[in-house]
Amino acid sequence: MPPTSHSGIPLPTSSGATLQGWVTRQPTTRLSPEADRTGLGARSHSVLVVDDDREVRRLTARMLRVAGYNVLEAGSGSEALRALEGNPTIGLLVTDIVMPEMHGLDLADRALARAPDLRIVLMTGHAPQLTALLELRDAVLPVLLKPFTSEQLLGKVRDVLADGMH
Image 1 (cartoon, helix red, strand yellow):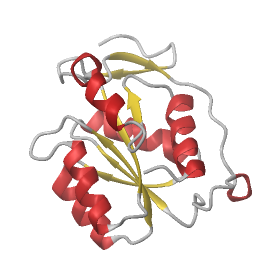
Image 2: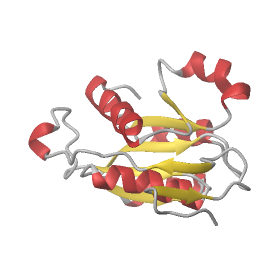
Image 3: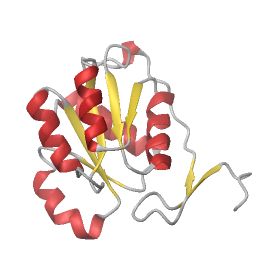
């Protein structure tokens, strides 16, 4: 295992198109509810992070928690749909696209059918194969390409919440 003294977080490299190698911890600023002018305050709504890769899911959730968001996690599309039904405070879905059982685009469609005001951010590490498809949907469903930094994730989340994009 590589040394961790350089402030990196080791992630498995055998899990396909996920964050591979080392992700450098980036400094983040904790958001106060007053700083969130989106109407989707960190304390009043929750973020649901969905990724079948446990390490990526946990790292993404941690980035959001450090920024002050209430975060729930799901490892599959069906688990995410159950979480959405059981937690009416979820206002943002951050989901991987390529997952077994139910891909993220299908999850997004089903989630929006149940909660039309839900905001969504898609994540993918399969840029070459999916870029064209995602560019067509980006106006409706914003995309975050893996690997990403905390600032990139939080910037995309803030943009989606501020603009009201699904």
